[in-house]
Image 1 (spheres, rainbow over the protein chains, first blue to last red):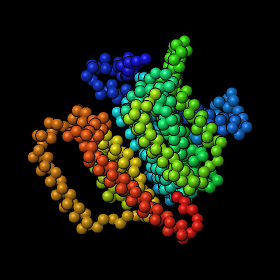
Image 2: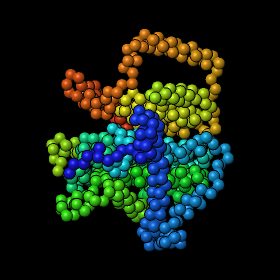
Image 3: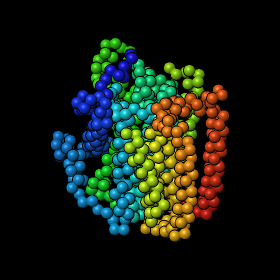
Image 4: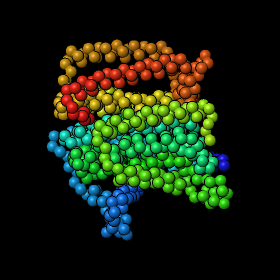
Length: 366
Length: 182
């Protein structure tokens, strides 16, 4: 099954209209409009996804603990997240006395910025991607290191011991687990021979067995597991949520944040989870490609569903696994967390990369 | 268009680089350094050197500046001011930087013709695949031997770092039984 990438429109109607009206040569205005539309689309996507993820987290958590969760606002509490959002907007933004004003307000913006930068290269569908970077994987690795800044500076600027300890823990944890994330992404680069996210998706065309999680025997599955574990740790979620261990540090690096600045951290954290699961879907689960089982009657039906629907289904399936892990495992101790990364996960990821190289060299890929 | 972008990026780099050496709060200096490095990553993108730009962000912003910030956290207190530069120091700085400026200006004035014609290259010299092919090429054009030597050097550094860190933790454990928390 060959897919023609150029078959789909890559620009929007307004941009096309401007090009027609002002002449083909007037590219600047059309480009500005194209990318403003893309940015607007991402903002809307982020807001809706965040609302949905907050609701999903509360409901999944509640059902794991044999509770009902939010039930009052709307049908089964479906408007609860919206109500919470409105509440956060109207809350007063407080800043502690003697805190560093510039850095205090700059810090929440940095993780948000990193979120939008990575979302701009995620392939949601054949044509639904803001830009396809040649070095997409390297870009992901580079930018995910960037969000560490927000946490570090937030803890420092808050002028609070708990925030400081929380942010130091968060930074140490994120820097350590980033290595495993990078190594398991490199495995995909090694297997597919591509670094652009779109091309990685296209390297998985065919049946379900052609997804990298199954196509490379053992190595693909192990890579996906290592990536999932280390990205849970990198997004500071339970059972690795040392940075905001409520019982030890009140709320860690965002203890002093309230109102809109707090909600920016909150949003960035949820979007980081979405990005991590979207990367699992893109690199290991065939991205936006419809699952094909080699049965013609079923396959022709499955391929009718648009690609972004498949992408979101896969991403949300991984998100459910993230939530499942969060609400069923107890929190690790700080030293256990570091020992787990450096003494177990990192060697496994390294050996897996070597194993993947052997598979490629011997041509043992299915 | 590209000229405008170049001027904007250059002004951004100069502005933040000036802030790095003049701001009173050292953490603000580190953040300004980050912004300045981001600007130079933008310059690499203008030159079509995508690989270099991404490596700049990953290594300098994601690595070096974070370690600078860690060092600041461990060594200074909040609100502590950096010592302002004395007048003789500023004078020496001006003298040295004007020499450097004169040198670069002389260089570019001499080679301006050959530099400006190649300008913003549209070739795929700096793309990921081109860099990869040159780095791992075993032929006479390839750089496989320097690449391997650099890999061995990096491995040595990593092992050295592990050895140093290990000796320190052993000494710590002898002093107290408690776990070292970060």
